[in-house]
Length: 115
Image 1 (cartoon, helix red, strand yellow):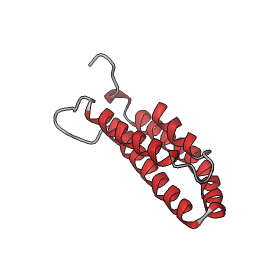
Image 2 (tube, one colour; image 1 turned 90 degrees about the vertical axis):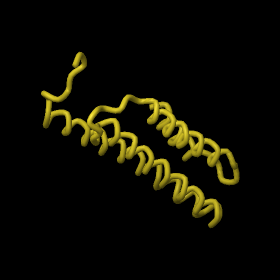
Image 3 (cartoon, helix red, strand yellow; image 1 turned 60 degrees about the vertical axis):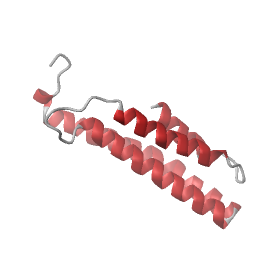
């Protein structure tokens, strides 16, 4: 969740500050390192943690691209795009949380802590 808060934090950065790209890139690369440190089930298949990381990569990648577009088109475009992302990011968090919740409810027998 810390990396998600870093991504959301960059949406409040003022125009002209180059810190957003550094923070977003660090969050993206940290997520990749965190993903590779998780245990892989055998046989290899798509798991819930894979879906969470894929969603985070897409969210962070889109945020990086939209931030770059906003910076290149000026302060007005940047402000508008950051406002849109301030709405899109929480909505996407709610959507992925709902999706994961439904996935867990659809197969409760597959969820286990001590197996």
